[in-house]
Amino acid sequence: MSEDRTSPAQAATMPGLRPLTVGEQGHLDSLRAHVQRSRTDVTDVAAVSRLVHETYTGWADDARATVPEGVVAALGVVVGDLVVARAPGAHWVLRTAGPAPTPCVVSPDGEAAVLPLDDIRARWDIGVTPDWASGYVTAAAAHLAVSGLHADDAADPTPAFEVPQQRTPAPAPALPRRTAPQPDADAAATEPSSGYRTPGDLPEPPSPATQDLGLRALEHALDAVLGGECPLVTFAMTHDGVHRVVQTFPGDSRESADRARAWVRASGAVSAVVAWEDQLPGDEPGTHAVVVEASGPGRPSMVVGHRYAPAKTGGEGRARAPRAVGEPMIVGQGDPLL
Image (cartoon, rainbow, N blue to C red; front, side):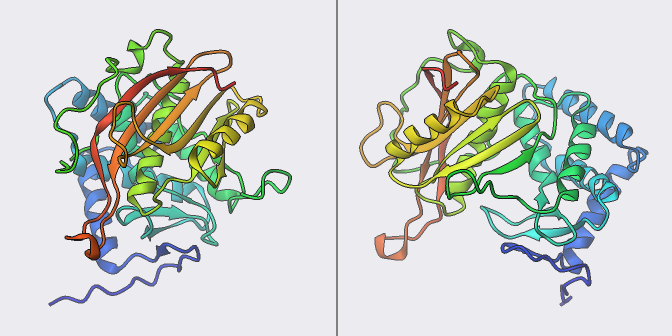
């Protein structure tokens, strides 16, 4: 039996990160080789950006095609390699926090990180513009160069942090598709529907940038509860056209959501979201969902949600991990956040 030893790469310093093992590095190498067989110059950001866009559009043109997970992961590795090449001292490690371990790129001191494989996979749910990969590489490298997530001492004691704008927002034609939604025996056979299938079906659809921000926030909220943050800690996210700023609001979800909305109104942002734990309309008491509200200045908000089943311990019968229930859905529209 072969032994999967830890590689001599620089050690990560953030909790939830560890160096890649030799076997894990070998897996990344095999993904790189897959892209190299396309004869794309993987050191040329423009060439990689074209390949990412062409691969996405080829998939999107076939409505019956499933997401090519291996191909997307391989593209994520070469995009991450471009980030490493442009951020001196940055290196690959394994992120062990969250629902599943995933490779990520960290700054030299391990205080800042980006997740190219997760980020490119999210784009397969939202849309890939022709210049997404090149914009991502530039923003991610700049993020790692300014090491660390800096707290805003003048704000609420719970720190806010900037997240770099990593790509040009693209219109979101539909809610994100999760690759393998898990059926839930406790869920009702038929789920209430708002009648809205995509953001464009809303009476007053938000801008593409606001849709993008809201759907990314919904994915983040669901990933948080599936990773063990149950119930979800309410958070708000604002975008000023250049940076995203995230602020958390601990406490009762309804009261903390009101505080988050007040913080958003004072932000002067061009788009914003608030995410909290709640029930979706028509659900029975005791059901769980993450809910996200997103809007631009003076525009009605888009409200979206996703049900989930929390973890069960052995004392409650057969133990199980938390899991998503059903698909994300559009709840409707609300008052403007800004």
